[in-house]
Image 1 (cartoon, rainbow, N blue to C red):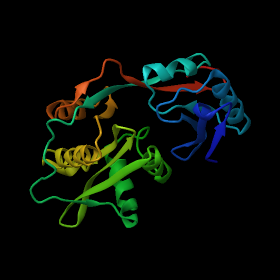
Image 2: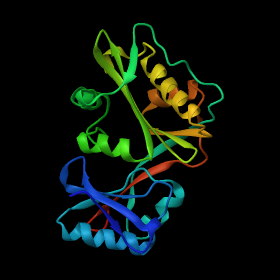
Image 3: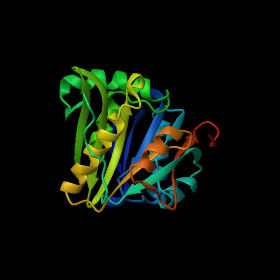
Image 4: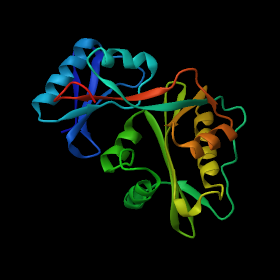
Length: 239
């Protein structure tokens, strides 16, 4: 089940589906850049409950977006750093011995295997999660990095309006510190700059100190407020 529920208007479109293929956990996602009404969120909770899910998660939400969900009984599952890049000083999209190219359909299996090595169980992508990341914005770029024809990293980057979003960045643990992450980030920022983005946003877990350090080194700065993934336990009303 993966569908869009509309409550009262365009800003109230909420996408509902299983979280990473888990039949017990649903994800309820508002349209990027919009805040749904309490009526829309309440309707989504009723529909998800009726379909037998035991809990609901949200995607990473900004401070402004969180309020309506918190008002419906959601609580914070995990907080994330939010960083922005003004695109004025961009890292080079190059690393010695590394080839960057646009991803192909035949890369998906290797991409998901790599993603499973780069992230813990909660955050790793299945096929639906990867598809969602690519479709979250009107335009997107899906790039892989290779060493000797072996896939060692990838990014998914999107644009909505003049804002760019580095949706996903993963590098194989065996090849850390070889400039692959820097090259992939450079490719993402260059793509957004060519499309006249004003800035690019990225989020990362508070515990992912290595990623945070890399983003800071490459010119990202912390935004005033972070993000949070929210959760509602449908049995108790709490996470």
